[in-house]
Length: 60
Image (tube, rainbow, N blue to C red; front, side):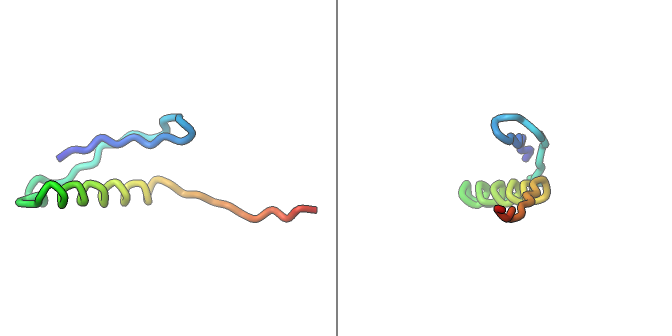
């Protein structure tokens, strides 16, 4: 199964990719289990792609 994914920041497309899940891994999964597997795959991809840095700025 191939899944097209696009990442947008503030409405601007910044990254596109295609994720794959081997058909044999899906086996006899239910629709809900397949959807959950897709969500996990996307979450893992997002965790690798996005980094947020922040710091507290002291007011003078």
